[in-house]
Length: 109
Image: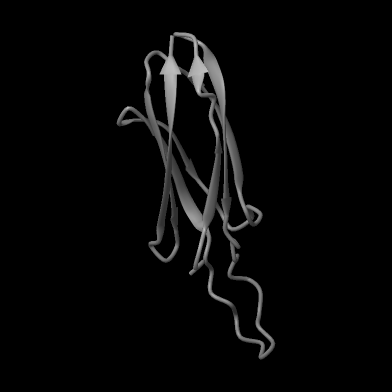
């Protein structure tokens, strides 16, 4: 399991009602594919972030399944139409059941 996973977000602080904004996220996670071997020839167990979810004021607006071919420190970007001020919550879940969370506020004018 990744001990400490640092998350980064790039979310505009403000936007106009109905505007489509760009959300950018990054999670510093090693993303071990399960195909590599250690110095003794033993397979290193798979440990990847397998699910990413974003909610906007409690409603799921984006979900993504990740596979072993995704590189370490996955960068995820997606558009979002904003209709009201509120909270964006981001959740990354890895193979070992560890859950990493972050959030951002946006003010819609």
